[in-house]
Image 1: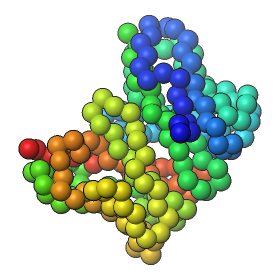
Image 2 (image 1 turned 45 degrees about the horizontal axis):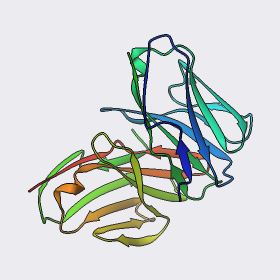
Image 3 (image 1 turned 90 degrees about the vertical axis):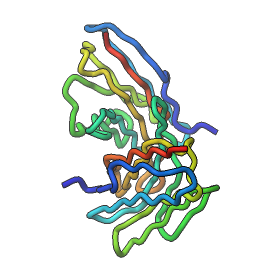
Image 4 (image 1 turned 120 degrees about the vertical axis):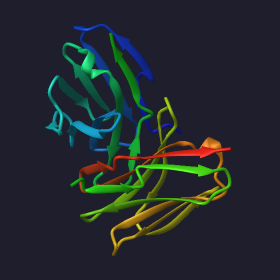
Length: 111
Length: 107
């Protein structure tokens, strides 16, 4: 019954690597979001997308990019991973202003 | 000021106690979510509310649209309830999270 799936629960990458975090939803939702969660800072919006090939910057887009080639998939890309991008990453999706669904999160460690 | 304010930030309770976590928001909503995150774990959706009250086991969530306030109650608390509880407001395309309440239930 999983509706929003993130590709990995735990990920360890090296500094400078290009990292892809994948999120897939099976509910035909238009809106998809990427957040990161850090102690004391809560969940902060990185990017969101309201349609295929459309994207909007959130509050902390620096160092990240996104891709939405298909409606069901929203990818977060770390072009050159750095240690300050070690965090918990959460994907969410919504259809209009109805219920939101959340992925389980990906704990990324950059060493 | 965050659009979504939670209180308290930290809460320690004895096993068996009744627990209340509060969430206030400053603008309108179409839905409000309560989420749970255990230490080192992923985020689990507990409730979605647009009005009234919902109950699941020992967890109860209420919302007062006029007062822009929601509460999460835990009855007969247990150490396994120790987690971070987060409320999130959904309006239009925008999803905004509170900072979270860290709950520790001692046996």
